[in-house]
Amino acid sequence: MLLWREKIPDFWLPHVRSDLGSVLNDHAHLERKAATSALNLEKYPELWEHVSELNAIAIEELQHFELVLRLMRERGVPFTVPKKSPWISGMMQEVRKGRRGQCIDHLVVCALIEGRSCEKFQVLAEGVRDLDPKLADFYASLVESEGNHYATYLIMARHIDLPETEERLDYFLNLDAQLIGRPNPNPMLH
Ligand SMILES: [Fe+2]
Ligand SMILES: [Fe+2]
Image (cartoon, rainbow, N blue to C red; front, side, top):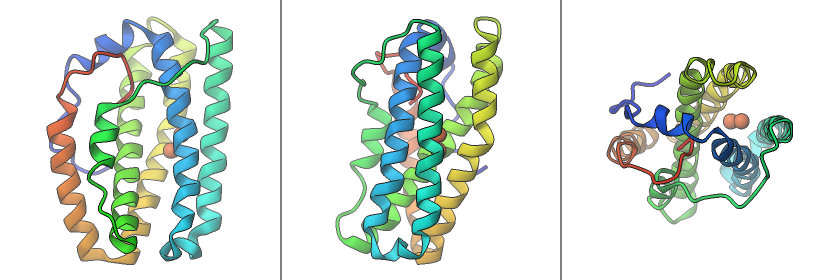
């Protein structure tokens, strides 16, 4: 996993622990959007050679989505409207316009979302064990898959243009460091 420039703020875990139901609803939407993002990446001709790989990611994310929905049903948590993540929208806003640059940025941002999810699931696997051991096991089971998605997206971007990807990764890692410490009023993954 890459070297983040800022660690997850200390307030994040207690905030998430305070309302696991809302976090599950947020997580369900995150998996749904991850599936959508994988399919949206298929619009770029630069990625047409990877279309089956992207379909495989979309299928995996939909499976994660279903697993989260099942955990929600078991806990009586309703599937409801998603809240906007200031961290994700802050990152997405900086995706450049223009096909090739947009494709590279889109991949880099998707990689960082997957990377932060992977890191946060690792924290949650231990951090909610006392509250909900089954949920803790579920988070642990997602770590490898989200880590692979992170690596796959970054490899795809580097395959298009290595120096430009490194430059944009540097840019988005700085942005992540700025945004991650900002308090979010809603308990969410990102
Ligand atoms: Fe996922
Ligand atoms: Fe993922």
